[in-house]
Length: 136
Image (cartoon, rainbow, N blue to C red; front, side, top):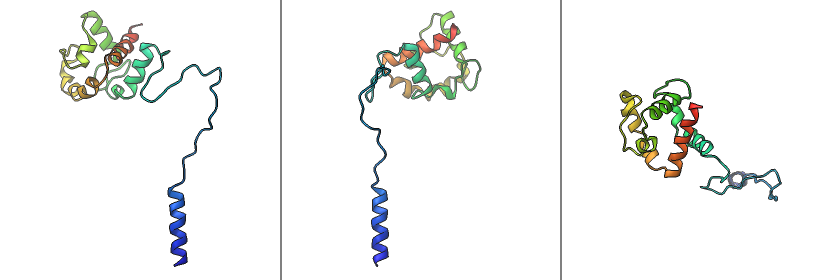
């Protein structure tokens, strides 16, 4: 009985163990940005924010790579086509535009519209900036 109580106490202790926390300290001079949950740093360029979204919550890299077609067209191909046709990437990502780069893959892209429609205009413009940055 004592062994059972000891094991339960040990298990409870381990289960309640706190995660290690970083010590509280003042920001150093090398710290340029302060983040709070849900905010982005004001010092990020639209291209940097767009890349973060594209590779992160947008999960765009699962279908789009910079220089090669995977499932969807490459980022360079998207940028070139939208620039040449003077089309609006943001309108397309909101689900209000026609597919102009690779219409055969539109059904696959449509499944991602709930993700892009949930993005703010600022986020969509940042993704657009990131895409256009591949023309340089």
